[in-house]
Image 1 (cartoon, one colour):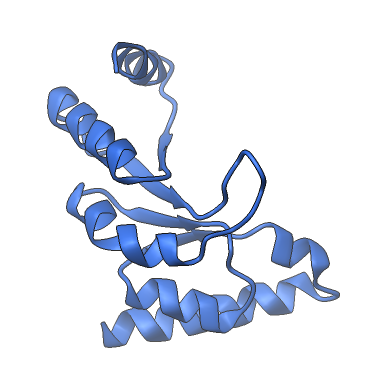
Image 2 (cartoon, helix red, strand yellow):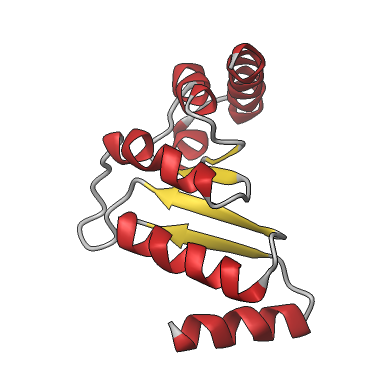
Length: 129
């Protein structure tokens, strides 16, 4: 936690923007404590569905941690495991404001079309939320 606080402070000194990444409840506890201690809310909190040890994706993680991520008081980012418009709509309905998409775009023949479709689906879902 001390290292995290020091890195947060250094990023502030360098005028860097931070995406604080969480994989579980414990990570979100640490992020909440950091935000509380710093008094700053100019951050994003990301929930990563990918296990970095074996690279598997747990799409249920985004749903399980959505409420906690939103409770931090900063915009939440759904990270990994999104492949199409239906996924963008699902995470937007859960309250995620942003999505980190990589693999789906690399596999797509027309990535620009996929981005447009995902944006439209996510925005539509967010409007009905």
